[in-house]
Length: 345
Ligand SMILES: NC(=O)c1ccc[n+]([C@@H]2O[C@H](COP(=O)([O-])OP(=O)(O)OC[C@H]3O[C@@H](n4cnc5c(N)ncnc54)[C@H](OP(=O)(O)O)[C@@H]3O)[C@@H](O)[C@H]2O)c1
Image (cartoon, rainbow, N blue to C red):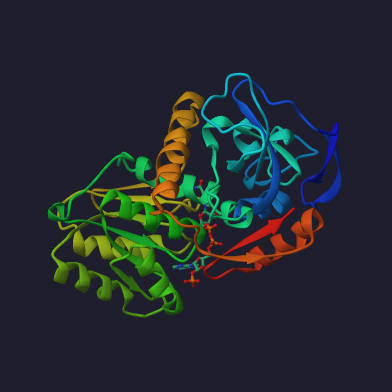
């Protein structure tokens, strides 16, 4: 292995990313060095590039978190990840490593903690593998954020329903897939053109959030189906108020829970007996590492092996390698509909 590799480096707040050489690191005892073959993009990447938010503690930085590639080297204590040469999916994020630029995905060699590295099935390409990490972690963290353990298995007679507002997004599509595993009856919102796709992922009913009567459509369906809708995931901006309107009708006097994936606006609306929580993993490293292991080595690995979990949403490949990341991030920032942008590098 060469001593250096190419990286898309964020030299300062405001960007742009510039391609340069970095020293290739050695993995720590519980880490894996990945030869990155494809990365996927997330809104947090352009927030960090353009605004330095969430905080970027170290410049020059390497951002990005979704990668698929080949194991180059295992740390001394790693026993849960296949050995060098194996194809893997890796959540390679400097965010959870105090900003360490060795851990960002947007480079040819990146470090990832072993809890977040799992085998990529032969049937999936690197491009498909790259779509999973941050969206899976966020979709699954929403459940634990509102007190629902990941090993929950509701039976149909439990009549437990969930509302996922924004199911055509990356996080939303995995919210649907994971809600299915947990046994929820799933109500979701998306543009009409994505309804069939989201039903295929596991939704019971999908509603067009642009319809003026979307709230009453959902409430009527929940009443007709005779299920208990007390749990919701607001995946996208502008979803809290309509979600609370639905809950007000479906929960009666009971308690309800909302996981909110975008940062909660300061003066956000509220509802009686309804807990509204920002969806975020624990900042306690030991707790978070255990959760990460359950997300990746539990839900994702099991689902990939059985075929019950699939890459979602559809992939849009952008070219240009590391040089192509700035324009690809600009495309994501301009807004996407039912796609995940992936860049082979
Ligand atoms: N808390 C965390 O740790 C964390 C982690 C990752 C992401 N996030 C946040 O989670 C959100 C989703 O991220 P993402 O990467 O999944 O987003 P994304 O894929 O870029 O979201 C695009 C999708 O949002 C949908 N959408 C937009 N406005 C909507 C509305 N009012 N109602 C329903 N759907 C709407 C669109 O659906 P249609 O195509 O159907 O119109 C579009 O497909 C972002 O705010 C992101 O910053 C938070």
